[in-house]
Image 1 (spheres, one colour):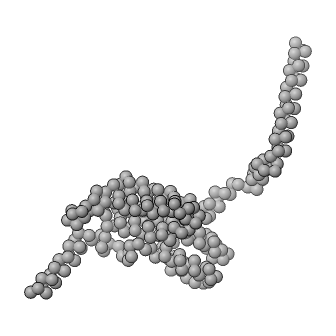
Image 2 (cartoon, one colour):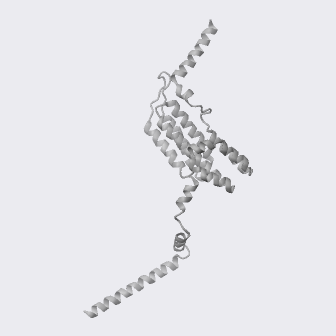
Image 3 (cartoon, rainbow, N blue to C red):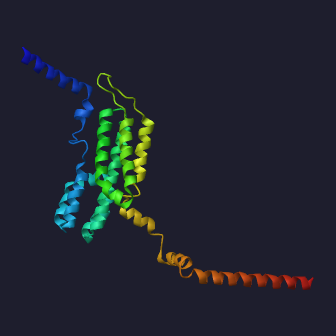
Amino acid sequence: MKKFLLFFGLIMIVTFNYILFPSSAFAYSYGDPGKEKMAEAYKELDKHLENDDWNRAEQVYETYKKEFDLYFKKTQPDISEAFKDKDKELLRRSWQAAMRLNIERRLHFAQEQFEDYGQAKLLLAKARGTYSILEPIYSKNSDQSSADQIYQAFDEALKALGNPGLFGIGNKQSDRETFDQKVQFIIDKLQPQFPIVSEVEKDKSHLTEENLGLFDKMGNEGSSSFWLWFSVGLIALLIVLIVNNKRKQKKR
């Protein structure tokens, strides 16, 4: 009888979990909620690049090519160019940009599903897990304090989700405004650090050698000669104006 009651109790627990938390338990097959396979693959990619093993690096990319086709299409021209030219830095930066886009994607859907606590929490965990791969790069390019602020923003966003509790016990009120603020903070911090490489180069394309040379001369070695001739020109213009003025006065 005791065994039957124990078995019955286990069945009831599983049933209640399914009824109360269907979306968080079964809607997405995420595996470890704190890991994103595409982001974890960056470590493997980086290792192959260190060993100049471009064949294995390309195999890593091919494994996740469908995800790139769907979600990170803007990075693909740069990735193709990186493999073609065997440009390690371009490939790393392009994959990093894709991870940043993936964080934005996860956070966007977390906002859309804010009322679904289990789902939003999983999406937030995926975004945080991806950031954990980018964080050493971010702190190297920026500073550790700023990198830690992003972790703090993730933690505060999680708190802002609230918690429905079990049967209402231990429930915490959600805060949509704070959640959106923290999400935007994370996005704003990551975007300039992990841009799409070709878009950055496109923005720089209006800076030609001619206009860069002009400003370099004005700002550096040629600055003294520039201001000398500028002053001479002003004096000459002043003399011409005075002479013309005197001529007008004589005619009168």
